[in-house]
Image (cartoon, rainbow, N blue to C red):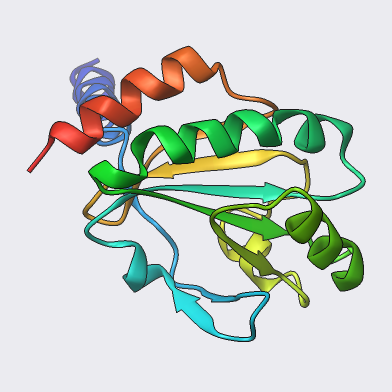
Length: 165
């Protein structure tokens, strides 16, 4: 009986530790290299120092296209305060479609094309679009959205993260 109690105590202690870890809500953004439309590169390390929205999307995704004006408005609202956005087009999205979308919609932020799918793989094997991550100034993922975010809630979280040192 004492063995069972000891084992139960260990399980509870481990569960508590995991809960505390998961409860912090922040894990380091995976090391990745983003190839931008202009051919330049940006790395995960470049995200540090700003609150950044990393949005995995596709031109064929109705929800992605529908939410893009809100993503643009959010960028415009907070960019002067240390906020950035990086839109990552999925590997199956034809590059010419992505370039056309970015140009015709006048996307004001950086757009990357994940030609090999390695970035989506690194960021949790992203398959569904839109999948969006909010990364704090320390380069940690604090929130993941699958589908369109609740933009009012997102704005509150962005403001909280921008206020952090």
